[in-house]
Image (tube, rainbow, N blue to C red; front, side, top):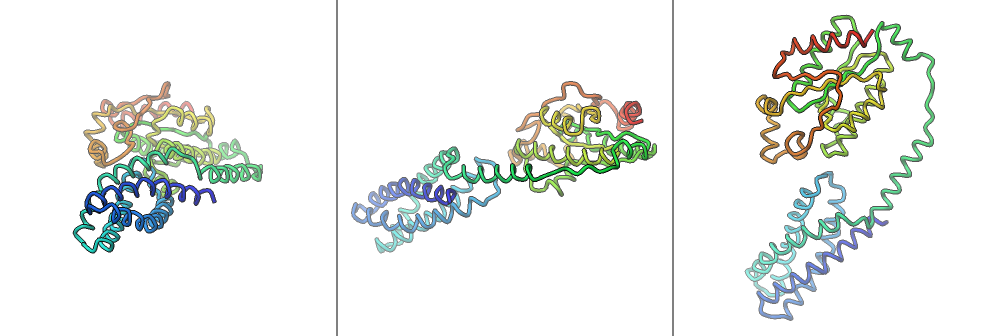
Length: 337
């Protein structure tokens, strides 16, 4: 298995670096080059075993942020590696204090060396290409073996039964801009007017069908793709769908438009300024993002690309919920019948 070969290759490359570092400190602190060689030689075997197992365990980790991953791996390995050096040095030198000195001395240099070793290997694909090929083959096989079934009841017939046209009303904007509030108010107004509706919301969806996704750009795209497919099914049922998602990238919103059909897509840009969104900060997210506790937070550490030509733009710092809902409702009346 090439993944196993990758772990073995990383084990040997790090062991070469780590052994030289241990040899240097053992020699300097014991004052005896032979004992320094003995300590580093014995740690080669034990640390290769520990390092390989450490790599296998971390390969299954779900931490996606590369820098966080490298830092956490550095600390967990250093704990294991330092304990190993202390014990081997203690046994060979017969002095626990000398073992602690050697283990402690190598800690800083090895943490730095290990971090950069991880950064380097993160860019190397050795051992990963086979896994990627298998994944691509599974996806190709799945698509090849899927044959869509044509049902006799059509979207048009469902819409005629409901007396409405299925549409996706897509609310986009920063966190705290008022998307969910307006989506909820719009659905209530439409439902009261006799429309068959459904609402999709970012946090609600992420707690269920998209609970396995993070906030990297790739995960954000997959989050929006899945929502688009769900909305597409609901439109096929003839429903009017109110969807509130930050959806910060224009290319992802274009993907939504393509999946559901441009004629079925109504874009509402809730353009409330970030200063107002931060004042509201009901969930305390902006404060955490400013403090560096949240990665890839839109508007702070990740970009938001404003829509080029939304159907409606609403600044909730200038319009009340009632006023904004009335504007949206009046616009929709020309689209839903």
